[in-house]
Image 1 (cartoon, rainbow, N blue to C red):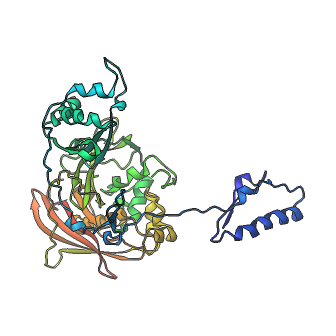
Image 2 (cartoon, rainbow, N blue to C red; image 1 turned 180 degrees about the vertical axis):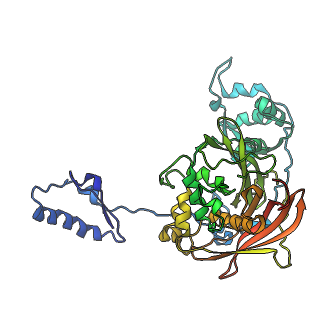
Length: 483
């Protein structure tokens, strides 16, 4: 593969070449040199051929590999023992790490040891001359290890560095809700501590920097078209309609779009209204908006880590909050670090009865291409090869595209397409959707909460029955309730 750098074309040409065989570059080198001399008047080439010597390169893509395909082996440095093969555990078997016994020193530290290491008398030396340390983190826990340069100082380290001493050294950072585990590695002359929970609060409650965002009526109209709002809901599609309003989930994309009015490089930069107690979302005028995010909690589920976060759309000038958007990120293989398990959420049980309403939406080959204009320009939703490299059949529909199409269908069937009746909505992404798939959203009324109907739903792909959205729930203001 040869690529010319167009910006340098007038002055010179620079080429980047890749090949599967190193020998092919000899032919390429000769072709460039001799064809240039014979075919271009005034041709000049640098004579340092080292720039044309092929060098190996590595291409890699992140991927998940089954644990049993990656055997773990422990080799002993002294060579006196055979290597030990350790079978990988199934992620389902990875649970909460039990509290380990704390190993406290049996005698206090003695400063007389120092005389054997340093010259007699008071001396000032860097701490590293006596003790080395390392630290790390695993989820909400901190790991701290200390070891000595001189084995004669180990007895002092053992006696001095107690769990109580670590609490004192932490000062105001220590809290009684944390737990300390202490253990000694005598053969390494080391003392190790695990402080459970000390980093957990650093995540929970963390506030992300505010994201400036803006929108105009064109953005509102584009979003409504992208999620398939039909023409009979003209109040969501026509800015001069007397009841013109933004679709309630419109703010979900503002954190992607931000203040941009043009397409941006996704990789390089990688509302409700009319409901009592919720301010109306003004679809007619642009506001000075910010998306403010914070971490709710980070939880250890054994085989995985869960991060719950919340984003709030706020008027930066008045502080008025328009909507809250909660999300849950699932980190496969990141659990098992001893952090809090967090609250247990029961799965939504879909009724076995006939749905109260069904919404069918036929996506097209251009659905994702239209939806990405709302602000999410990830090439995975436009480039077939990019999608294949990520392990899919090709480009895929945005997860939030499916999510918003389901929201549009639910409000239409259960709320008369009236955005003022839309209180809350949520679902879990279950499977990818490809442009051209038919989305079927089935809905059940399962009760009420005050003047709101409680609704469960799921979205499936008609062609093969796979579930695209599960654990779906919504609250819709009842038809006869006062707006």
